[in-house]
Amino acid sequence: MKAIVYHRYGSPDVLKLEEVQKPTPADNQLLIKVYAVSINRSDWEGLTGKPLYARIGGLIKPNNKILGSDIAGIVEAVGKDVKQFKPGDEVFGLMLNYGGGFAEYACTSGKALVLKPADLTFEEAAAIPQAAFIAVQGIREKGQVQPGQKVLINGAGGGTGTFAIQLAKLAGAEVTGVDNAEKLELMQSLGADHVIDYTKEDFTKNGKQYDLILDVIAHRSVFAYKRALGSNGSCFVVGGSLATFFQILLLGPSIRRASGKNIRVLVVQTDPKDLIYMTNLIESGKVVLVIDKRYPFSETAEALRYLGEGHAKGKVVITVG
Ligand SMILES: NC(=O)c1ccc[n+]([C@@H]2O[C@H](COP(=O)([O-])OP(=O)(O)OC[C@H]3O[C@@H](n4cnc5c(N)ncnc54)[C@H](OP(=O)(O)O)[C@@H]3O)[C@@H](O)[C@H]2O)c1
Image (cartoon, rainbow, N blue to C red; front, side, top):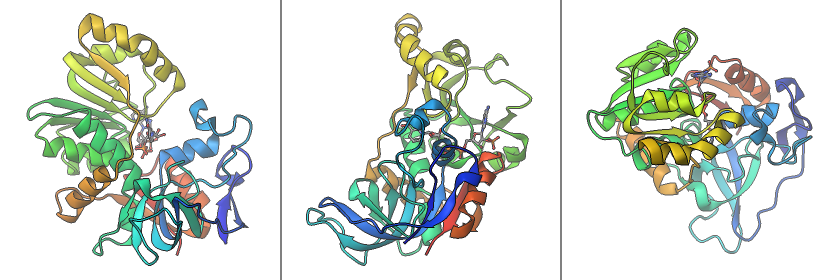
């Protein structure tokens, strides 16, 4: 089968379209013919090896040679222990090790997969999983946003952010979206009440405070988040610099005890019910799925470059099948 492979960390130039062995499903896995896969920042991080946590599967060079975590396709075969899916099912979801999706076929367990609704295309379905898991948990399950609360989403014009703005608005919050100037209009069109261009203003230094901050691209000190949180506010950090993560892990508990402000690294769970929840909102028109660009499989490197260079508004999708 064909796959987009890389053997060392680097720019999109290190990605090559190669012929590799078709994977064989283990007893608890499905073999899926991939029709579409979307690009996530985690792919960019896995490609460049930055931040350092992206090298968890190989410090010097990547062990997993194929990136791609969000897939949609048709089940071709199932291992003997798989009961909930059968060959011919149209499915979509997350590859549990955040890789293997930039390929004509992928093997994964069904734990983060669901059946694809007939009214969504494969491209639309592939654009949902990772961003949906993060947004649903950050805003709804951990964030527990209530009507009237002030919510700030940092990195709100990307994959997770475009869902998170809409979930916070559905919960009745007053929402501030932070991203670059190119994405301010998009954030407003999705319902953001206030928008901030991160190249011009630091949201932790403008004197405003929030009940919930969801940061998908965190690089600040724990004290900056504390300053921007109102009393008993919460800040959940899902991606960003390792220094910020360590500082939060180290100092977050004592800040919580001393001030009641809850600053944590959010470890995202991949429960299929969250994927179904978001998909239902999209199908009912309550949430808009923002797909910025679609690329053919052979141009996967260009698709990653587009996201990595800071242009992607919402999601970028690759058509494989
Ligand atoms: N904790 C967990 O369990 C877990 C699980 C899965 C994924 N993750 C992580 O969660 C993150 C998800 O990101 P995503 O897929 O939503 O990314 P994304 O689609 O790339 O969105 C990130 C947005 O942030 C913007 N941005 C860049 N620098 C910024 C800054 N200094 N201030 C404000 N915004 C900035 C980007 O704009 P530009 O165009 O300007 O760059 C982009 O629009 C990834 O880091 C991923 O590794 C965590």
